Image 1 (cartoon, one colour):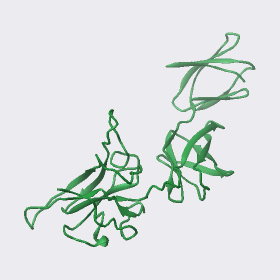
Image 2 (tube, one colour; image 1 turned 60 degrees about the horizontal axis):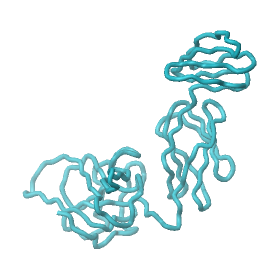
Image 3 (cartoon, rainbow, N blue to C red; image 1 turned 90 degrees about the vertical axis):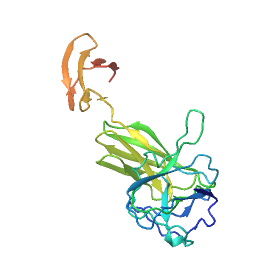
Image 4 (cartoon, rainbow, N blue to C red; image 1 turned 45 degrees about the vertical axis):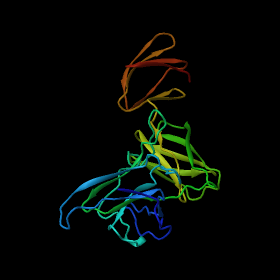
Length: 263
């Protein structure tokens, strides 16, 4: 059964830390679930999805919630646990807010790998604060074929900005108040954290081609034909490589596209 209203959200009293080090701060106050076996002895292995359709406040934040559990009938905040279960990967269903075409909430908190039944609730790993704007991460420009300049915006002062990526290797350095220079070797999604605030996911895909003066860089996996502005055929080239170009405009053609590049 689903029991509306958590009598004690255990704010600051939980002793739950995910295997990646993320702590839970309190329970979602909307309600909790009770799943009771009809026997005292049983063997079970299962995953759990706690749907949030119809939930009101506080709003859930992407990647900041997960299912937690405790023995049925317990009244202790310290009994809430993730047990041996694990939450899905960052940005996956079960950790992000989803709505259908009609704008209805179809989100759920997902936990994988449990082996006992009990009470279930949704633990919140961060409490959205109206006084704190979410961090916004945007791409300003590519400075080289593999180095991009990113901007971090968030209203309040940005301290200790840390960047994370779904693919390695990625290196970065802070430049000024709210900019990062990020070097990536392949397409990846990145996000930043500052204190307990987190940004959106931003996909970085190094450009397929890059011209700097009379040098053309062709990205990995790309194959293209190159012509000079006077019509001379400069060959068919496959990345990853760089080649020298004649002065002036060149024209490129590859499977699926064409481009005109000026010096």
